[in-house]
Image 1 (cartoon, rainbow, N blue to C red):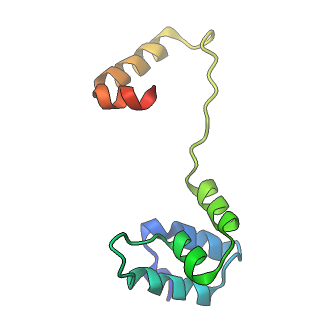
Image 2 (image 1 turned 60 degrees about the vertical axis):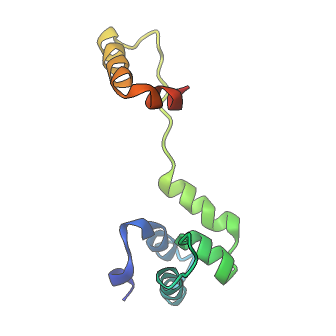
Length: 104
């Protein structure tokens, strides 16, 4: 039953279940709560687990951070090849002003 209800956005539910942070019954109830949520802004599964099922915020959202966090790339600008810099420069320039503002 759990697998049929999981959406791409509910990876966190599957992860929490696999790590045994939540059990199958809780995941099923939380998914039902999500699909039946009548709030204007549909809450995500992590927020439902914290708000409605009294799970520890830090425990749940630590797993969210692990799942969705971007890794950092540490580049030594002294050793990077000039053609790579040019490619990066072209991508940024082609992304428009909005991308440039986001990168600042």
